[in-house]
Length: 265
Image (cartoon, rainbow, N blue to C red; front, side):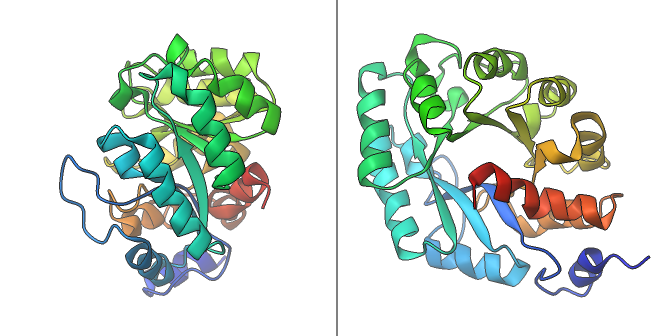
């Protein structure tokens, strides 16, 4: 049976066979290294070339500069200018717990950023520690998506994230990088067992069979496409799903249907 998604990608065409929603992207220069084409216009050009309809973005400067509020302003500006293409994540820094609740309220109620992105590795703060304590009831009350950078045995292991998600069942927790290269098994198990935990496909190491593993062990409804644009080449991220040994229906779910439900689009 012909796979329309794979055939479009093979021909070098933008994907039109299904809506593609990128659940894990960024905006602006990362700070620690060079990354090209980091502004909104350049990102949209890349999205158009590949057929990515929407991208959920958080500001790189919010992490790299330590000024989360300025970074959130940058994200909000892009979302206002391109509301049909971008979904905004608020970033807060766990090292300033006294500022977290106020910034969440400002970013949500004034700037219009609908969801939250946490980077415990950059903040060097435990996901279940005091630094992020105000995040969870805020997100739970509003049913927000909380995207968390997870990477092996760092301060946000999949197991630690699961314990938080179980306490706040109304939020939707998205484990960025699906636990990273060493936390994959644990992330898949957590997503399978905890109803409000989901995984994205972002990883700089494009390991053969990784997407198939996530679909098989976490469940296809728990896996969302992500690119890490503009950190990484979004074409590779598209390719690893388009060429995965999955049915076309499963690819449709991963590429966009799951994100549409999760973000309430």
